[in-house]
Image 1: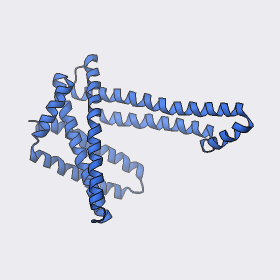
Image 2: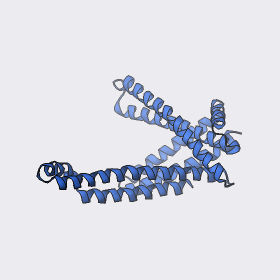
Image 3: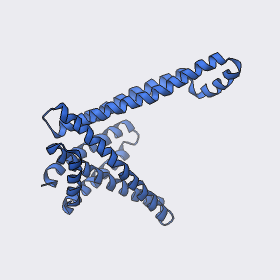
Length: 238
């Protein structure tokens, strides 16, 4: 389901991007502002028509992205329901949407903390260490924050699938998170580092074949996600 969701996202955004590109070419957006300014003085009626076309294009962009994001959010919740619970129920499906909404709310302060840490470290070490080392440190921070988020995500889903109580599951996920086993965390970290080293090698070998490199990167990351989800929901919590 993870692979299907990623492919679906790619197809939808590719189609919508191409659609917007064709619309933009028809309007010639690069000259639209200049043309509108000229028409305001020479031909107000044509200026009004062009302004209406530009307004329609902007509304298409906003509404299109809104509808796509809403659809993908609902479909993402459905895929989580399929992965974590095999018994279909429309009521329980909407509860998965509620759980993911709460997760988005929790993601806001988490991302804020992430950016604060990045800014502080950059301010402290930008003049003390070389650019290459700073990039490495940033990569380590990115990896740690990503791993912690994924682990909490799977802990939340694991708790939620049993009782379908959103805030209760959030509390249980935090409790499980506080009791993390050091050896299990070390294994996850080593696996993640090994994955990144492997991806680094593949990216180097395929530097002139970016399409294949992207497919390989996404594919291996999805394999890691699947392994981490299974590990957290079985051995990690056991």
